[in-house]
Image 1: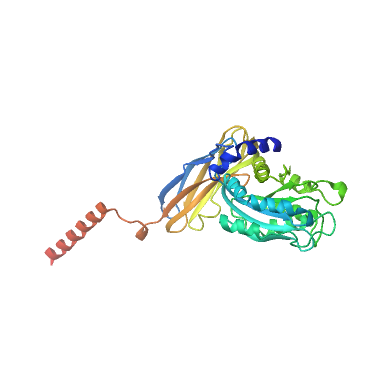
Image 2: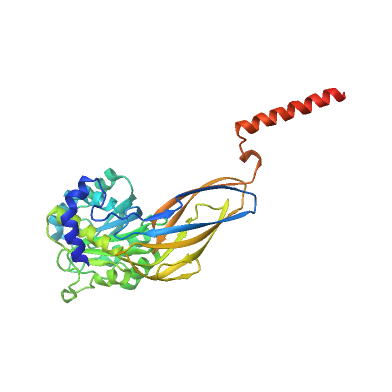
Length: 368
């Protein structure tokens, strides 16, 4: 699967960059219908609407994507670090093809590996500057073959400011296996990936999985989190972009859960509850469609969503279609709860109200 993604990425990379970040290898258009909903509810009143989530073939183009990069800064990685910096703009443009992108950077070597040196940002210029701030020798030049990737992955998973509803990735660029250090064990790193929901991807410049050289294969983390190890295509900048996009793209190929959720944006004014109605070839379990799905074909899922007015006011919020916890499409909702000052009369209503008041005033004068 990775090899096919890499071939596709190389073939379409020029078009991808020309389209300023739209991943040309996929014309997918995941969606949630309706894309907007507006209603007025009395306090305590509820309304139920049917929402359809469509997961199209190919990788998503409208997701929320958070990527923490970890750079091996040991002495053998000079050319690779320069390659990443030269390709920075194209890397970010390519990743933005999956949706709304946020990136951060850390490094690992020994000692003093850092999982988050520069936290996630959606600003492209800041992200490029942050990558340029990672340099050979940060944290030491490496005292033995395995590097402190275990500690860096754990710190990145627990320390990054992941956004609600994001598809989360930790991408390590390195040429050596990992080791347990600084009090961090392999079990700790796996638990941190589970806690954060992040997927580990390794861009392997030679020996990330060569356990015979000593240390822990980086595949321990990719296999655990549903990620991959992508063998580097060399020091060409376009090849690095293709490798990174292949790793991320392949992680979207299969999925097991689909649901919708407001991610807390409706609280406390509006209560939101969800019931799965149809689950393509899978089954409904409560609010979730569950099955073994792939993006080789378009699939649709239906949900009944109930909004309940809990606090008077005008409440603007979002509801996301989620695939394995990551948003692939978003709708905008507006629910007005209660009356009084929250109900703004239309001009015609204001005219009728004025006539009514004048009539009451005239009747009062006649009575007097």
